[in-house]
Image 1: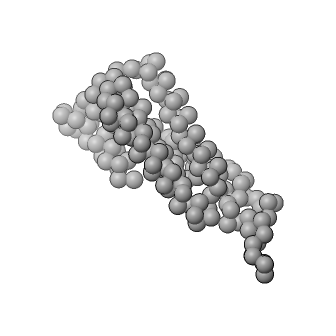
Image 2: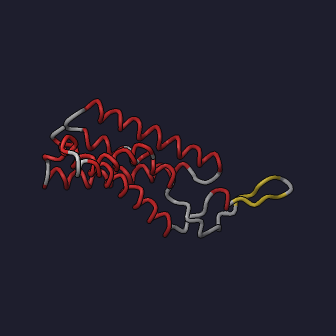
Length: 160
């Protein structure tokens, strides 16, 4: 979360401070696309009828039984994981201008996304598939926006 706040504050500061003006488009791109990733996952989640694992188990004397008819859990895709996977945006931001930063964001996004998703799976809030779909959604949003920006405003991504 701190990374997103730093990019947002840097982006806002770039409108007032001339020294930061050169980073304005990249920081704005990073913040807005990250926000878009998490928002799309949240929107899909709010409309989802998939139940969470903890809503699909019924305690009994002999343990737990699965209730696969459970509905309206609003559990798919994984919201916590989207916060980590949204860092993948940094890979696309720096891919053409700074490959070390790009690789850092790629690895950090994958590690944090899977770590946050794993924590939720251990609590019984998600299945692995929920987090894999979250990764796929964040990746596709990034690829789509990246291709649009590359076609119409490539200078945003090629300068550092």
